[in-house]
Length: 377
Image (cartoon, rainbow, N blue to C red; front, side):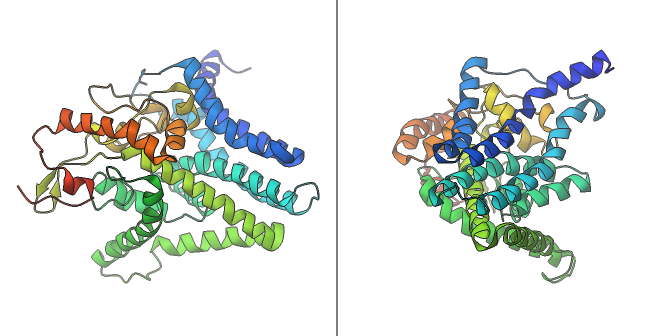
């Protein structure tokens, strides 16, 4: 019999396990075919946003003295997810390419939904895992990223984004007035280059060449090669095409969230190539309960930048006086980002209010708008 204290721990962690609902749903969509294949994105985007409306905002903060043992049931979902996702992705590739009831359109729709899962959940869990000190957890994060052919995200995120967020040196900080459809191709190109250069520079500081075996890009390429081979074995060339398609959708999901997280927010330039330290007001936050369950508190983004290795159940909420708040959770804001005119109408006034609140002394924002350094003061 499970002790009452253990039951209480499980109950507190249980809402963050709701992402597992998407796995049987994906298989149901595959078996049913037809319009049913649209259920995964509809539920991932709208059901959890509906839960936001029902549950409201959660502004409570966990006790930071909570031990690792007390976080076991929170950590467990991120540990379980990689093998579950692996079996789902390649199992569905095999099923879709060995059945006759799925049309080409249905397969495209089905693996769009798979990409929503691997992007919304898989990449998000890899983000949690890559920040941990435990090497096994970091490896699980690498495996998840290889399943969407975006392994360099780990280097870009750790070596570039966390150092240079809110500056022109960070590719994934969206500039003021930059629409997502311009942001996305720019980031695809720049993040790959910046992540490779960051690892190359790390090696150079140890007097090692870029092709040294310790360069993590060798691991990235090897893991991605294994995933491509698995897709070919499971479904041949059609299987590979479906695998690449879901990977693209997952990457799009990741980058639209990156777009939302820091849109228009910049750190003040101090001259001589230096910027102010990262502060809570350099990230957009959302305290919406349902989507924080889905995204394991990713929307408490300011605290993540303050303490990157802090496990997700311990991330702290910031008030409106401390950090900017979004009107909706990330899923709805991500959909809004697909319509630039709507996005600018909603978010540009918020950015201008943010500037007036935190930087009333800055009069010329044009260089910041263009992702450039202003002239030294």
